[in-house]
Length: 103
View 1 (tube, rainbow, N blue to C red):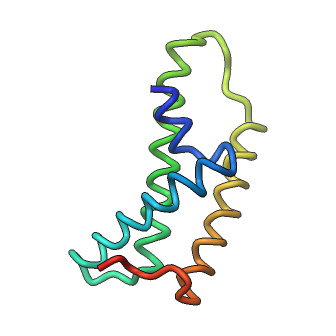
View 2: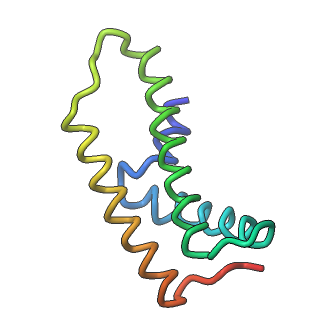
């Protein structure tokens, strides 16, 4: 569970670049096909969903591995800052049509 969560979380540059952004692109392409939603909004929603799913899976798995270790505020702030940087990048890429829907 921790491994899958780590792969979905923005804890390192390659996770987002190779996993989350392509996964968010696929999800956003499907979302815009199924509902009247802008691709920019769908991409951002899908990206944040993958990040939150990753954090949640890491939290659940980590609780079982290290039941006595508390979560630190510093860690949370770093995760949020990384997510915001990638969110801005995704917004700019979709806004300027560098990334377009698959369908």
